[in-house]
Image 1 (cartoon, rainbow, N blue to C red):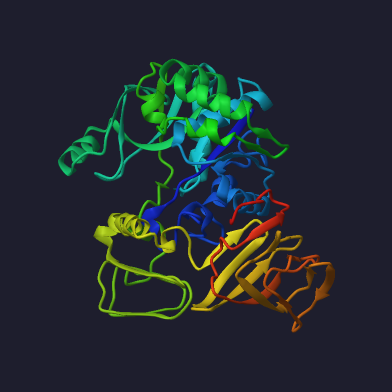
Image 2 (cartoon, rainbow, N blue to C red):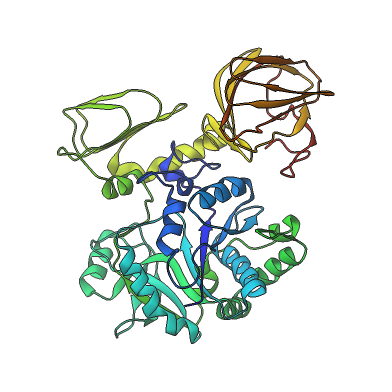
Length: 473
């Protein structure tokens, strides 16, 4: 089977705050094991057909290097399509279909997968894809409907026509109230809308042109004016900003006469809340899921996670408690879906905790803000092997660097020299400087900033390997 996995990696996962943030969303986190959900998604399809090692991944421009790093670690050589801004699934899949057509031809079979779901039975997923492939090759737009095991009010549903295997879609329905959901479950004809699809690139683009021509035209303009590299395609920003934000269901699937559905019983979970993550994680005899350094006394059926320090709880029943280095969440599991309201409130207040945690990822590695007070700030820089920070200067702060692991190649004005563990240097205010990691091991530096202003926008980039001149990310 000549199949192209299309992995959609643009969501923000706000209902899993404070672990998931805008710049490090849930699909990039190891929530259910040692690998991120993105890596697990790739591993599920790497041996399906002849597409092993070559997924097409649509991701946010700001997360490009983190996505690429994770997939290479998983053994993939991905082709990335980077969105300047999220515009929902219809434009994301349009970009993927247009790129696949240019690289593989319009008859390429696209398996569209969210990157942030859990599948318990991978073999069942493979069987469903293989059974749906003939219909997709024949021009049908196949979606995979999850066979429900409870009356769930948090998902949309699909009413499937009669028959076996791939069936016609009679209609899509929105999230129901409890009584309606119980009726759907009893009927045996309704399936959960899982947001995964199988169709040829040509079939999808033809349907999009008929039912949402403006989306197709905007994506075509953005790609025509964009940058095409060997392993990345970057749509032109202004053209893509003009694209309507709309889901693939609203743009195409609810309007086309070619929609079909393949039932899927594969232990699917969208991990859309802390309650959902509790359901798919191993629990102890008291029903508690514990991650990290947790001491739980007389507590039951709770999700308890400690990321940076000891977490102690007493007398909890069906609660979620999540501790990170800069935030703590406490809520009943029954209200876990309401966590998004906290993120909205943080964003309205302009709080950085809505966008990122204390550790911030960059193309060269990451930095962790250990301490910040008026007039000074302490960070830990982690520079990946081969990583290079931009050649830059600051107008309002000086910096002191101490190498604690690895080897650093330092540029300071016209000097270039190396520092090793337990060696240090000083970067005066206004001096041009850069850090490189020339070695095979992670470089770690403790950076002490001193000045009257310590914001990230006090960076003047002179040269940057990652094309970020003039930016602060």
